[in-house]
Length: 146
Image 1 (tube, rainbow, N blue to C red):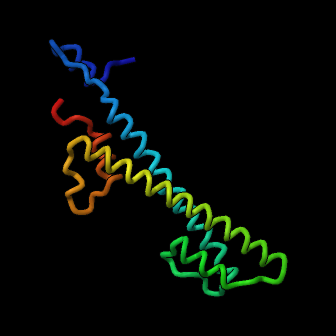
Image 2 (cartoon, helix red, strand yellow):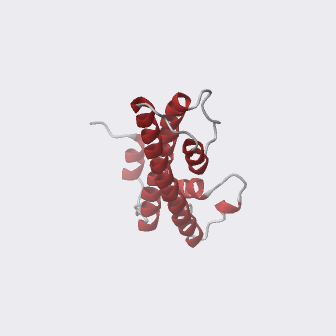
């Protein structure tokens, strides 16, 4: 297999310092990956909810729906047939899943915020950069002073 350009450069560079993986950044990368997975799971769950809600409520529900709002909405209906009761039960299950995912996202954001602050980073001071974005940048870029 032919050598890539970085390999050629590395072979010809005396006293090359090998990059060491920072365990804190590896952990941060793992946690931010998990936070991303939770975000995707939340989107999937909300999409499933929006698929069921129009069958229970003509016209469906508003697009940005919290778990609490969905629970209050579902509490107002009492289906009489087995199909409606099953839809309602599935909707209640999805709402419970959404609440669980939201709690996990909140905990993940809290953990990531603590890790970013512990690194001494000021990324969180920038408008539009939250714990997940800051952690992703730090984990992907690594130590800028290497």
